Image (cartoon, rainbow, N blue to C red):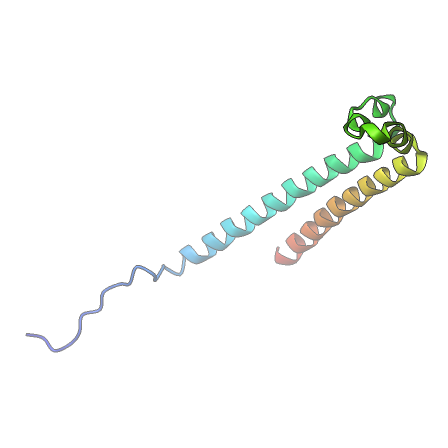
Length: 112
């Protein structure tokens, strides 16, 4: 009988060489999500900047949901200030997308 305790490898302990690859996978996954979010925000923003100024903007069923104020809703919908507010919201989305991409590029240059 041996009095020295036997050491068994714990399932939690990972080899040192596996840790950097997991960090790289996590970093890559985060970068993909940032790019997808930026792409989504840019598409929504570009749509909101352009669409209010197209002719098809007036062809909607939104005023019919408010039968008592249908004319007032249509007037508000066609108001240039309302269209400009929607376009400004689109510009905010485009700004967010571009800011995220610039931050991603800066971080990748710092880690490289």
